[in-house]
View 1 (cartoon, rainbow, N blue to C red):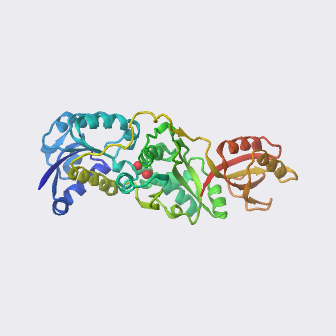
View 2 (cartoon, protein in one colour):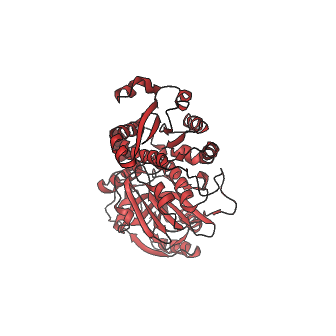
View 3 (cartoon, rainbow, N blue to C red):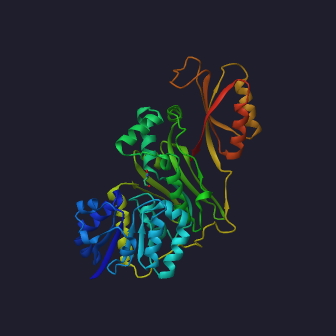
Length: 434
Ligand code: HSE
């Protein structure tokens, strides 16, 4: 039976889960995979934390050089997060010929090309299932399960924190700020929630996933990003009246002719869309391949054991495959020449504005839409006697849904509408996805 030694860098939530899975399932992997995986070393500055997990003192280190020069270590698991010191540690492991398994989406999406170059030089493996969508095996689905297909679209709810917040706002009619506070108290949101609520976390993941799905480098700076901090409970309620649910979506589209679109932003989807019922902190990714058609993966995108599950699946994969696989595309820092990243998206739009209730105002608004060739598909206007919610000032709310139109046309039209006499303000513009 093959013996495989693992080092874990960082014994936080994911590192602890990884250790637990590896030790509790050791016998199971011996039986089912014919490999004996042992944790040979951990890099952890908080020695007590390691001791509390039952790790022998001789295996606890605070020195990366010691870990990567340990001949009993074959695979180094990096679960520290952030760019440094994780990047230096991962490079040290790869330079020593150790295979690396990481959950680090920020490091991976920014420096994948550099890590892969180092891995190829020493024939080391580089695995990153846990970097995207936690326990949901989306990376292996793309690299090993979907390789027969040209993938045209990838649509996902790939951040659990924002999905939790939006679900509770919708369910309980609460404001963003109130739910965020509660989510922080319950441990669903970080003390500094910026990476999640501003869409950075989802953008890191979309950069990685769309590179794999479309077989070309999708650099982070090509991902359009908007978070959920400006979302009002009123929009969620009006959207619901029109048959929609609001989600933070990560969307990747590939027209097969060199045009790629990658964006992370809040979007309304119809209540009967498969992603509409993905609630709380769950994640899901919906893929369309030219041969398989539509598939959807659903599960936990974060957490100690779900993310540990992804890490351990990579450890087993690396240990049971003689040849390591690398990116199917030219893995450079920048996008490949010839790929065009679309910024003038085609979408439908939900637009909410507040207007004075007098003759001619809506006619002027309609004139602006006509000028920009924007056609309206659905419409709500409340009378003066409507049940005014907290936060709704003077004027009456008007809500429109457009037919598919261009992002730039909508932006220009909205600017003009905001400046019209009789318009108090344009409150929100939210994309509506089919
Ligand atoms: N913070 C992420 C989320 C989990 O809320 O989904 C790790 O990527």
